[in-house]
Image (cartoon, rainbow over all chains, first blue to last red; front, side, top):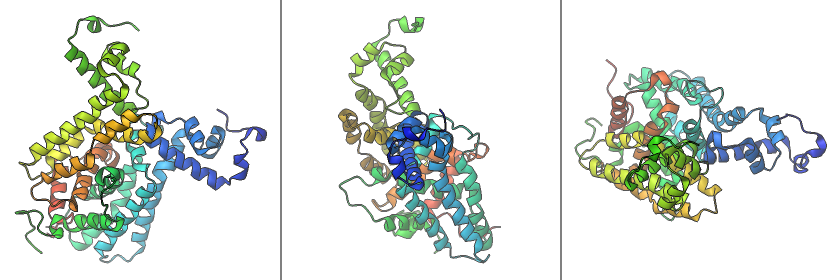
Length: 226
Length: 198
């Protein structure tokens, strides 16, 4: 596959669409097909067709299929986590509002994943189907989460809290991912669906206080203090 | 393709059925529904494709028998087991040990959009009322109110059971005990213990 296509063979649509628009169309098509067919099953040909552009243009924008996967699936998460950690780090090193910190993470991450509905499935089917070129050993997500760990790590130290930071961090991330992925499983069509805000509040409440917060929910298992 | 001596041996219909179901489940989990061909599944099972069709009729039916029905059975078994046990370990095990099944199911549901000419697959997936199964499964956790915390609890367990390989580095995978302990703790009082560090 060449990276260049003679001008005259390009579909006319490419002249009319801006580069950003083409890129967005390709990223959306990629997430959709990676989710539906897995990394191995989704061909660059199909992705380009789904986006309504030529395959040559896909390669001109992204170089390789692996790089397209990174841009479409990993980058949105990467950008969100990096921004979150940066914003947190820019604040003074005193006790932050714990609820605000957890809320900002859960709310932002959940919103991102719902917006990019195919992202989580694309991530897990890729792993089930085939290792991705250039992703050896640790998944890109696990490297990101090491970065994210700085937040609970320092907050725990500041407050004298005691918890398993690596597992707790991933528990929150996994919970939000599953909540977005299983949206249709959890909230069957035709049934009343809680608002997004309500779902986020439930997740934040669970992380901060567990079930005990919600009232008499775990008989015999209430927490001792409060 | 040469047929192995093992495949030529006369097998009971039950045995053939099992071989096909096993091969199908592996294929659907590894390549998704659309990219698993009945020819490859038959080959992996060591039987002819004609025999596959004689047993199951269609690929969608095979998917239902290999993936949808076992998922339903698992949830049923989990519910029965979970009722006597107010901890989430059983649900974690259920999902972690059947990760392929869960991923195959999710991928097929995503592919369904892509396969509008496959009403049979759509029917099989429609018959699976996952939301109801989840709700039932989690009612098994003693006294947990449905519906509010149920999706969150399920998501928490599901996240660590199904995404573990993505979330943890290869050399840092926690033990099952650690995961179940942390989830259980979180369900009871949240992630941050109120106890100060020693």
